[in-house]
Amino acid sequence: MKWRIAVLGGDGVGPEVMEASLEVLRATAEQFGHEFTADPRDVGFAAYERSGNPLPEETLSACRSADAVLLGAVGDPRAEGVPVELRPEAALLALRKEMGCYANLRPVRLLPALASASPLRPEIVDGTDLLIVRELAGGLYYSEPRGPVEDGRAAVDTMRYHQDEVVRIARVAFEAARERKRSVLSVDKANVLHSSRLWHRVVDEIAEEYPDVQCDHMLVDRAAMELVLDPSSFDVVLTPNLFGDVLSDEAAAVIGSIGLLASASIGGGGGIFEPVHGSAPDIAGTGTANPLAMILSAALLLRHVYSLEAEAAAIENAVGQVLEDGLRTSDLVGEGEGSVGTAEMGAAVAGAISRTGVGADA
Ligand code: IPM
Ligand code: MN
Image 1 (cartoon, rainbow, N blue to C red):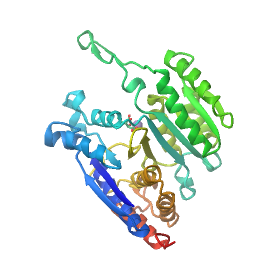
Image 2 (image 1 turned 90 degrees about the horizontal axis):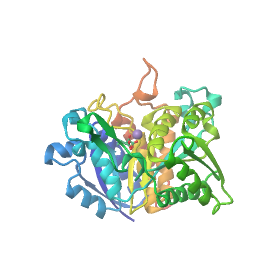
Image 3 (image 1 turned 45 degrees about the vertical axis):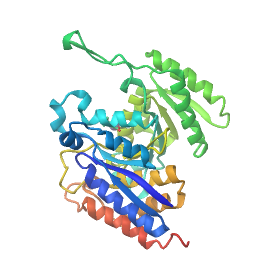
């Protein structure tokens, strides 16, 4: 198979973790007999500095004509004085919208080798394996009106959902549940918000199409609490845009580090595959960032875009293997404990794939 992937390293640690994931993809392509072409493009503050636009037209058209997009991270403290619509984050939101990506899947699974990296007691975190299905193209992130009013003395954001937006994201969640433990927990704030009452009602309607899937609802504040009290009780967590953003960082901490959480943004064409973490400007350029979230995002790409289950599993198993072998980046160790850098971790995962002997002729 031929893979044509638009590669957007972006800002901060983005390009570093991207390099590691490309090495892993190259090893996977070689091992399984695929052809991999990466089309590198600018996005974020780096693109803004070069061209005055954080999402240049040529980047967008490269993303549209590729099979899928791999994205590192966007965000730079130097962008603080830049008009909001030209900030790196605006480029990411525009890219998601332009690519029609309305569903963001964030799998959160405790890797056995990392049980002790969680801040929670082993008996609580043990068995955690959930999937956050975050609505990505609407809600508080996009609804109008938005912006400053009264000459900047007040500001407005709007949380609006149309029932059609809830229908399509709910279906993604219920379909995903059928491949898992057949349980959907829909998160809202229906005791206060009108948009949440609509969300709740529409999710119940869609649930009737899936009698084989258990459907429950939980208020977002309670869900935030349950996620640390009993993370292994969750299966598919269906959330509006903002709640999913917040709960996914919390879920990442539960399994040990934000540097482990991958995501797939799908809905339109190929999709955007990016780690859940940000650009981490404090450690950018030091070569110490954890590349595993980016590497696992590449695995999600192979699974979702090309239906290459064996290849995706090979990457995931290689990640499990190097962790079993004791390799850790600095986010996963306590003070004074030894750790490896970004490139070393990437090379170890790539090496583990090449060594499996599973591949084209298996
Ligand atoms: C994420 C990020 C983005 C978001 C930011 C960078 C705009 O936090 O993907 O979770 O809020 O969606
Ligand atoms: Mn986030």
